[in-house]
Image (cartoon, rainbow, N blue to C red; front, side, top):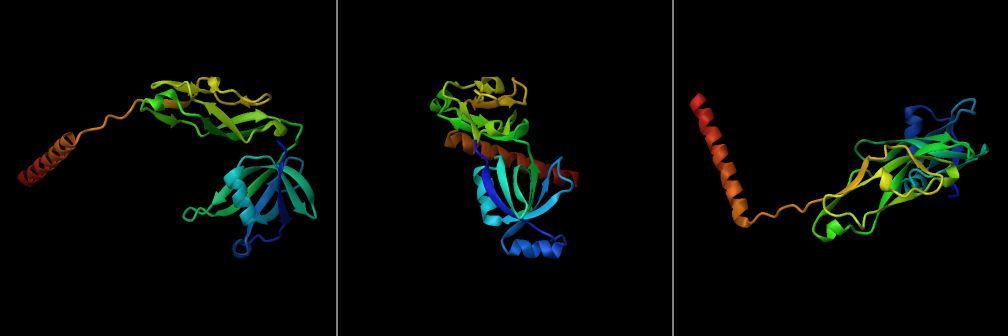
Length: 214
């Protein structure tokens, strides 16, 4: 896939107060790292553009267009968020060589509905993404999981996934990706009442025991 473009600008802001002001103005601070860089480069990107990118292509290869410093092919390597609001506070980019293999996570996307679900079972997705190795140009947006033939009790492993040409999974082939669980037994109103009565009885007995001990 062709790299997506994200505009950036270099910044000199480093203090907490300056960074808060930067965020208040709709910019997110970040740093570009790379083995062929003499030093990490502090940058700032538009908050709305970054959020849209994180929602749609969080692991995509990017062309970071740094004003006055040229274009760099990068991957998002770390996103720091506020623990309460979940707003992005800082982001790290890692410069890559388009002719060298990279390791990156790719989103798994369920395709179709399993036979087991049609019989009342529940599809449980054990993994939501998988780490792969490939050339940057071969990094897919997502990898489809074909689950149509899964019956209740069946599992889909890494070995069952059809990976695009040039894309190699970095997980064990027998790692479970998805399973179809048996339908949960529905209890009747009478059974529910019996369970509640038993719970109340246990609570009453426990209270009586504490009074005796006291």
